Amino acid sequence: MTGHGEHVMNGATIWLTGLPSAGKTTIAHALAGRLRGEGHRVEVLDGDEIREFLSAELGFSRADRDTNVQRIGFVAQLLAAHGVKVLVPVIAPYADSREAVRKRHQEQGTGYVEVHVATPVDVCSVRDVKGLYAKQAAGEIAGLTGVDDPYEEPADPDLRIRAHEQSVDESAAALHALLSERGLA
Ligand SMILES: Nc1ncnc2c1ncn2[C@@H]1O[C@H](COP(=O)(O)OP(=O)(O)O)[C@@H](O)[C@H]1O
Ligand SMILES: [Mg+2]
Image (cartoon, rainbow, N blue to C red):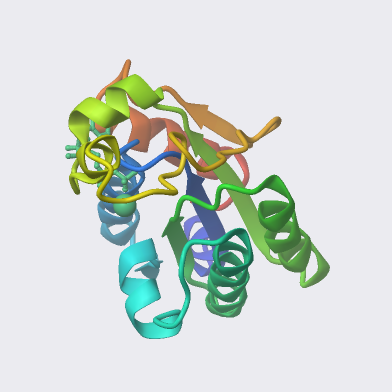
């Protein structure tokens, strides 16, 4: 098998953590397109879809957010162990919870990359893709991550993307370069 083929077979989870509207989903899909073009098997486990099917009964308390993240981490690791590049654009606000997912991957010998999509809250709240920041400001919802609910920034992510200062393509390229460095793309 060629070196390229081995990389294609090598599964990994790439978790994109960050505030709502930071660009996690957008960057994940840009990367997914690149990876698919190279022959990788790719799955995107997006927070909203996952909640609908895997975590419909869960809310947004700390305990429920943690449970949601552990479930997604469990599924991601299973897929990654079978050679899939699993892209996970999910907020995952708590450091302990993210560390538990990393540990599960390490214990199973599965590749894991943590990416902090580090768009500042003032930029996110202007983008406001789902109108959540406006709803929070209007008092229609509470517990919005980064506003009136915690977001624990990763202290030492594998990559920090300043998504407000570079294009989606540049972010996807930076992430792809990291995967290449690690023998994952
Ligand atoms: N440089 C950039 N990187 C990522 N997203 C950007 C950028 N500039 C503008 N955007 C826009 O910001 C929004 C981010 O939304 P989304 O990816 O759904 O965020 P998240 O999944 O983090 O909630 C999208 O509408 C995207 O087009
Ligand atoms: Mg998203």
